[in-house]
Image 1 (tube, helix red, strand yellow):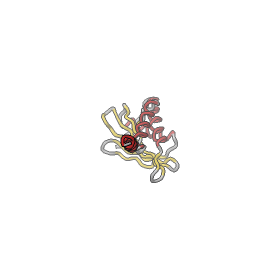
Image 2 (image 1 turned 30 degrees about the vertical axis):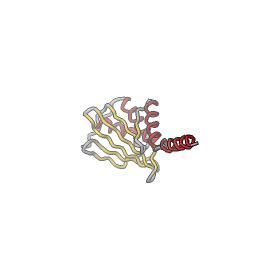
Image 3 (image 1 turned 120 degrees about the vertical axis):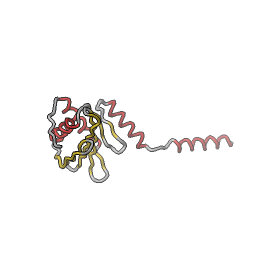
Image 4 (image 1 turned 90 degrees about the horizontal axis):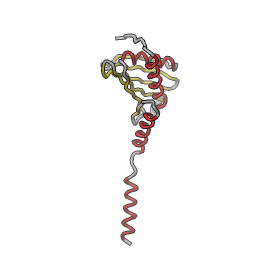
Length: 148
């Protein structure tokens, strides 16, 4: 009788212990799905998309601006930072925030957040911006305008 109670208690504790943060598992699944899908886009837990490119920051900036124009997103702000640049754009009811960080002279990282309202994030649009920017870079050289 007591072994039956002990078994039930152990089962109950195991079930409670196995409950964790579903967001972590979903985030890991999403990162794996993006990589296995061939996009090379990674996501953080809060739907921030990022990717590292074998391109200089000025070339990546020019490709990003060309991509925004192709996707009919209006650039609302451009700003140079210590490590690269920041670009803000509007896409309908969404705000696009892009950070371009210079890692080396020929390597840069792109970080994209697409916000809808105060809380919602649009992960699909952020990922598509990165994929389209990669295509622009692959299509050929983009003349970077120096704005320093």
